[in-house]
Amino acid sequence: MVISITEKLRHLRAEKGWNRSEAARQSEIPISTYQAYEKLNRKPKGEAAIRIARAFGVTVDYLLDDSKGYPPGPLDRAAYTKPRKLTTQSGEPIDLSPLTEDFRRYFQSNPDKLRGFSQKDIEELSTIRGYGGSPADPEYWINRHVEENDALDKCRRILVGPNRALLLSILNSIEKSQ
Image (cartoon, rainbow, N blue to C red; front, side):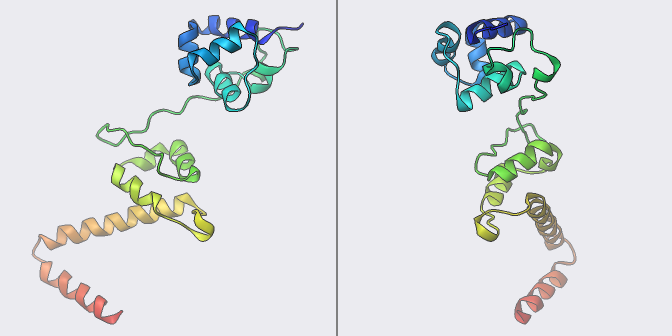
C-alpha cells in the first residue's frame, strides 16, 4: 500500500494530538517548512527528516518510505527520546554548547555527572584539548576536573583553618622543588 508523506504526517500528528504548529515545534523546524511537507507532499531531507522522525517516534526509513503504510510497525517505531534539559543541583540550566560533541554526548547519557557542576565548570572543560585537538576520553577529563576541584576545595578549607601555616609551607616547598 502506497501512502504519501502528507498522509503519513497527518496520521502521526493525529496520533500525538498535535496541530501543525505543535508538530513543527516538537520537530524543531519552522512551521512553514513543516507545512510544506504536510501540505505540498515534499519529503524532508537530512536533519529535518531526522528531527521529524524523532518528534513522532518513528524511524527515518519509515517516514520516507512510501511503501510503508500507517500505522508504523514495531520495527518502525524508534526508541528515541528527546534529551532532557540539563540543570545544576540548584536547578539552574547548564548550556553544554561550548563543549565538543563527545562531552555533550557523555553528559546526556550520564546526567548525574553534572552534579555539583556550574556553567564555569563547563567553560573550563571546553578548553580541554587532547591529542589531535579533541579529548580522547571525556570521562577521564571530567573525573580529572572533579578531582582537581575537590583538591582546591580542601585547600580553601585548610586555608581558613588552624593548619593554614602548615599548608602554605608545604605549598612553598613543592613550588621550590619544581
